[in-house]
Length: 141
Image 1 (tube, rainbow, N blue to C red):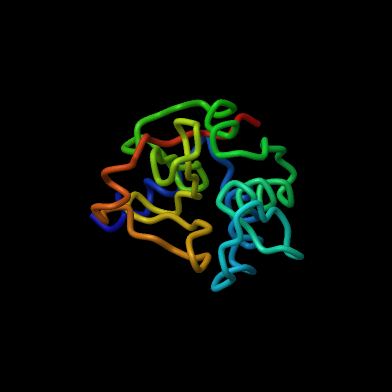
Image 2 (image 1 turned 30 degrees about the vertical axis):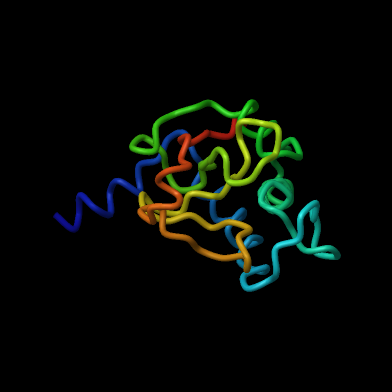
């Protein structure tokens, strides 16, 4: 069983393990930082899409600025098919005038790393995230 569990993370053809590592190495620098609406770099801190855009950018992948635009730019897939490093999207987390209102980086089937308040990990099994979940998006490389 343990071998199967480990192998599912070792055989990730669509998402580069190296890319995911680079993204998370950058993201973890900001763990515990406060959420700042409109924030998109370390000088201001981050909002959700600012964090994903910055971290993927540091890993060499360009993402649009907003959660909605990032959703539109990814290959959509159900969370059950998502891998670490994919983005995870949510709706109606605030009145934004767009469908997609929040984005995080998937780190495991039940956990994301995102610009909450503070920036850090969140449990995707939490009822709040479950009721707002749209699904995952794979970054096109």
